[in-house]
Amino acid sequence: MKKLRIGARDSKLSRIQVDIVARKIKQTLGIECEFVPIKTKGDIDRTKSLKDFKSPGVFVKEIELALLSREIDLAVHSLKDLPCEMDSNFEIVAVVEREDPRDVLVSKDGVGFYQLKPNAKIGTSSLRREVHLKNLREDIQVVNIRGNIETRLSKIESEGLDGVVLAYAALKRLNLDSHVSYIFDVNEITPCPGQGAICIECLKDSPYKSILSKINDTDAYIQTQFERLVLKFLGGGCHSSIGVFCKTDQDKIYAFASILRGDKLVKASIEGDKADFLSLANKLSNMLKS
Ligand SMILES: NCc1[nH]cc(CCC(=O)O)c1CC(=O)O
Image 1 (spheres, rainbow, N blue to C red):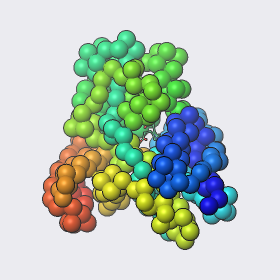
Image 2: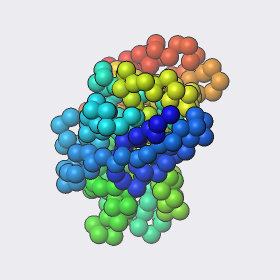
Image 3: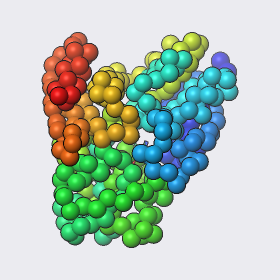
Image 4: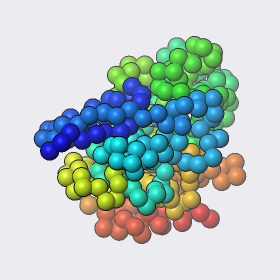
């Protein structure tokens, strides 16, 4: 079989994620891959806050165009970068691996979140993280920062911040998790739907769909599809305040979600059988709608 061309963002983290997928494809399916780096709008325009991009999927569009023009055979993304409402030409054929979905604080002096000085300045451009941080500590001042992980870490010094909040998964994959000062429990900051998961996206009529689906991690797939479905039912763009977290254990699903209503963070939780996936996602979103 010919080499498969993997398209993905051109960042250090993205390359590491592509390596993880390529290794799995080689080991499990015996197929070689090559990496095709693609610049996305989200990478090019670094001045804009993520909240100000008009359409979702700022890290995705150009990669999907490369799929359409057959310049690449598959795309590898951080699942959380994929809008929950996907264009009908495309499909998530596998969730390959899910790292820890929690958010973490990297602080200036290594102090924990509750030890930060009053009115501490914390960098993030995620509305979800902002809302949760203020819910935990009213005094926290949020500063908007953008850029890849290394850039955001460097902004602690360059912007005089007391810390930044980032995805644990990203720091682990970049081998930077020794910088972590505090790990937020999922009850403190509800994770972003799909956070920590790497996925493979293909054209719906791709000849590689069925072979690539062999490297799907079933539990990671169910958890993240559940989280994305709740986000979709709530009408959330992927840069909204909405957090959803789903855990699985054998035949069971345990999930909760949080959303900003007025100036209050409201939360709901649910559990049930995997077989009732759709109605559970529906119920959970309805609990948060009213
Ligand atoms: N918002 C950008 C983004 N997209 C994916 C990740 C890495 C985490 C993941 O794989 O879910 C990050 C960085 C972050 O949230 O700090």
